[in-house]
Structure formats: C-alpha cells, structure tokens
Image (tube, rainbow, N blue to C red; front, side, top):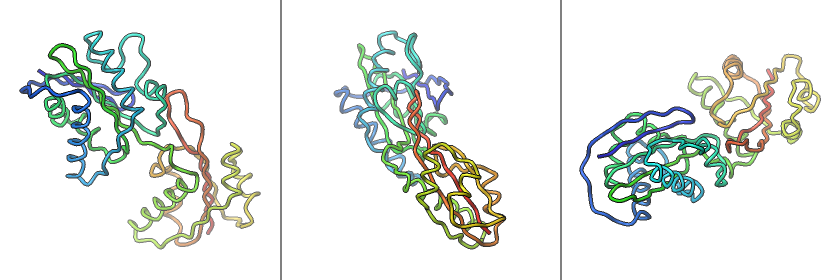
Length: 268
C-alpha cells in the first residue's frame, strides 16, 4: 500500500493508492533512484534536469524520520515548523519550493504513486524547480519518503537577474511581433535598488537619461519571469524606445525565500 501527499508552499492533499512492492535496497540507493527516475520523466516533457541538493536531502530525511516516528503522513508533524522553514534551517536558499511525501513498500511504489497523482506529478515535472533532495526512512517493512524541490537563487548575481528580466521582456515583445527595446544596466540603478530607496524620483535623479515621458517601476520578485502586470502592459505599449534595469538580492526571510528588488525605467 502507498499513501502520498504533496505541497506547494502551503497547499497539501493526500491520495491513497495500492501498488505492488519490489526488492529491498539501501535507502541511499532508493533516494538516488528517485532522482534518476524523476529526471527521466522531466526529459520527456523537456523540463531541465534537477540537481541533487544535500541540504534539501537532509531536510527531507529528517522529515521522513519524524513521519516514521509519529506514524503520520503529513507535511508538518506536531511541533515541527512549516516545510519552507525546515528547508531554510538546513541552509537551503530558494525563491520557490514544493514537497511530496508518501509511504509504501518500495521506491517504485512511491514514484509511481506520485506520477499518477496530478498534484504530485506537477511538482515532479515543474520546469521552474532546479534542485531536489530526497529522504527515505525505513520503519519495518514500510518506507517513509519525502522529496523537496526548490528554485535556487543562491548562484544568481544582480547582473544575472537583470539579464533574465531583459530576456523576459524581449520574449514578450517578440511574441507580440514588436521590435526589441534597447536595455542598459547602469550601476547607479542597481545601487538604488540595493539601498531600498527605490522610488521613481530616486531613479530619475540617478540616471543621466532625461525623458519627461519616462516611466519608473519598482517591485520585489523571486522570479525574473514573474514581472508586474502594469510594467508588462507599458512594455507592450511602446512602439520603440529603451529601458534601464537595476536589481539587488534581498536577504532570505525566515522561510528561506530569496527575492530581488528591481527598478525598471522605460524611455520613449
């Protein structure tokens, strides 16, 4: 028998399934098998392969231990913090995360159960996630399993984030058959974003490009592909022109969520 549950941030559900058990191997081998199987499935839908993250794996193993000890399938055992905080406490830094949990007689049962449940499958195949950690605990004949997914931003510099915002803007305009806008990345704008004084006035003062019709947008986001609706509306209204971008990473919050403060100034 297998039971599984999935969570994306604070969303969770449980789906019971019955499958057949397989051979017994070490839990470390099982964890690696699940990573390999997951990447095989992701390749079928052209999603990038997930990298193994030891910090996510440690958090997953500790949670599986807790579930096995309490004999409870859940994302938060009594007195345990929420799953994003669990990841953060093990040193993981991320802009988004998801978790699947379950128990069964074999890793094949766990993986098949997750793949046949829409919510769990969505977590497994989500192209946004870049890293994964799996933790399996054996209790008698039962395996308790946790897999944590995360979009890691720890390797992204401000310049990287700015370039990704630029790519998103170019892609959206290309989809609408609009010409490319010239982008610049002035250090002055990045400095203002880092200072927290991200008002339009501060941005206009710092930039040498004076334009009475310029528009400034400041926002915070963990994902360079998740840009404000009002900004994208303005971007798609411009027949031509240019813009400047400045971004600065913020300190991860108590749940380990990393974000960037971003300033974008559009010129006609």
